[in-house]
Length: 196
Image (cartoon, rainbow, N blue to C red; front, side):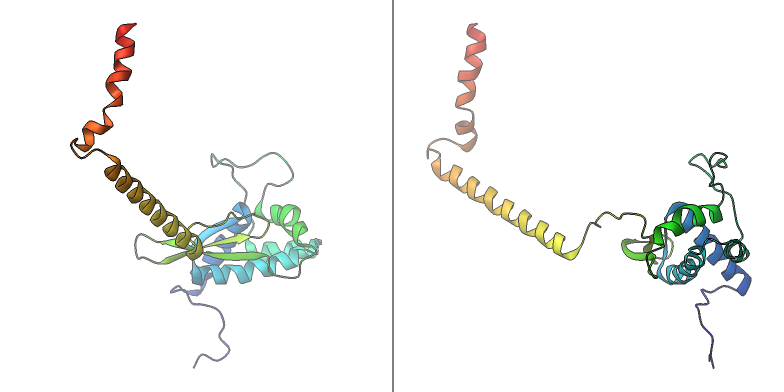
């Protein structure tokens, strides 16, 4: 029986699972958002929110506690070079200097999970976006309401096009083919440049 066993196994042994959670939380704090599967995101969210709650106190004891859980690592820039400038050079410094102060007035709920429409290529696993609420998210494309509106607009355009085509067909003289009626104005336009 699995009494008093909490958390997800994620098909990994204990050390691998801890390492995975730790590295995903570090990436979340470093980049502000990560793309992963739903079970991993739920595990990472729980750990990240607890660490943010501890970091809000901004004491030396809290910093040591976070370092013991998170195993601090240095931040890198776009070129994968270590950041040497400024007060924020590690993940824990970013957590205490930039992330935690934004959540001082908020009691929990520091992250958001957004389900994505695409799937992982190898096994078709559904992907989600786990992001801190400090990041402003753009509305996602492909919501049911928006796609229904696009279908409606597309259908209206088709009907308008068909109505115009029928109207053109009925307005044309019976003796001329449809292409000749369209080219009646073209010879007059071509005659003017030739006369000049």
